[in-house]
Length: 158
Image 1 (tube, one colour):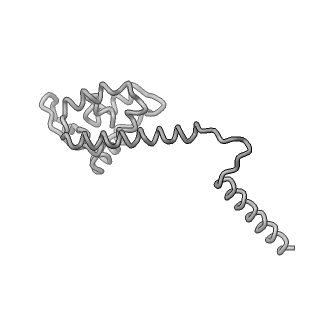
Image 2: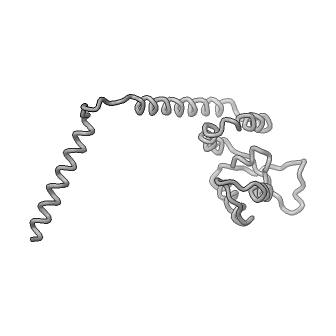
């Protein structure tokens, strides 16, 4: 979906780009499979068909743009690839989006960032070696019960 932001707007252009630039994440595939994936994204509402005046559709070419629902799916990609921020900004200038949708994305990004901070704090807080928490006690109790059940089953088989 991110290739559409880089102005590869038809299934053929995306297939051609993938064939010329194979990576570990995206391996070359047949045009039929590329088109099938694009159509699935379109049917699920992540893409919508657009008419482009600068490209000919002599052979039934369909160009796509990303819908706000599709942009929601790209938010994690932006966190993993911050170098692509300029591409996203250029795309948003080309296809403007309602301001309420932008506010919605800001809320999603803020929540995602807050969760990352919470996880970092949870994993960076060291426990003292001798301290046993409630979770540890519950785990120990479950393992004792499992051992008792296992030993009673083995005795009843004898």
